[in-house]
Length: 246
Image 1 (spheres, rainbow, N blue to C red):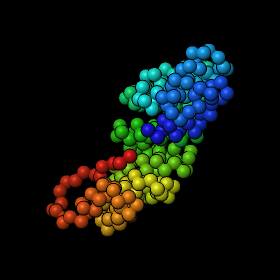
Image 2 (cartoon, helix red, strand yellow):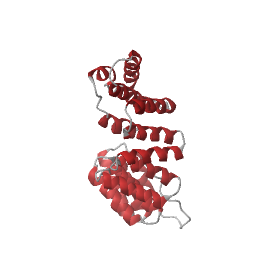
Image 3 (cartoon, one colour):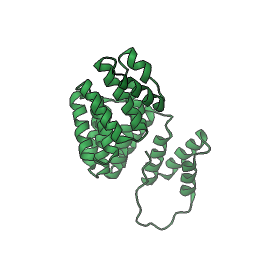
Image 4 (cartoon, rainbow, N blue to C red):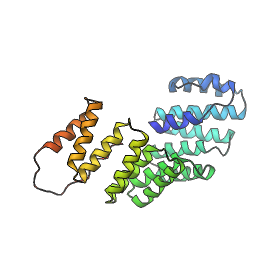
């Protein structure tokens, strides 16, 4: 779950040596044990204690213990109010608990505290997209991109939203931007191939699948794509859009 580890661990920066000694580890199991020990000790500043609760909440998210994560982010906000990371974390937990209204509120609070919080915009876009509110999703993904022009996943998600709205050319432009930012991410190349295939650009899609197989001969999706595109064409039938890969 990229958003749990990458987003939080890059921004947390544990405040004091007391908290860091117990919690500053990439191992979530060790972090839970260390942060719990520190919290129970009752030592450290308010900021130290907030960071310990926050770090343990991230570990709980990784372990899918979402209610525990909610409780810890709430505790962190009591020791260190107005930190948008706590609202973002609560939003992620509420999303996973299918409480989307509460999630949207928490992401909005995070944005109110940090108008350039790209990940919060992105999560709001994902919720809107899943609900079928595609125009609203486009707006949120656009906000995420404006806040962070290097946000490859936001470009990719907006690409699929454009596709669903019947605008595959704009979708292709966005997925190409995602690839330009993160050329080694196979998912973006896979998305490009699916969109090209859906647009009827079979030769271009085949070339993308071939490149993917050169990079990874074990890529079963690319291999299946080549088999599918090389098969004789059947009479046209009502067809579904390509399966979204995220």
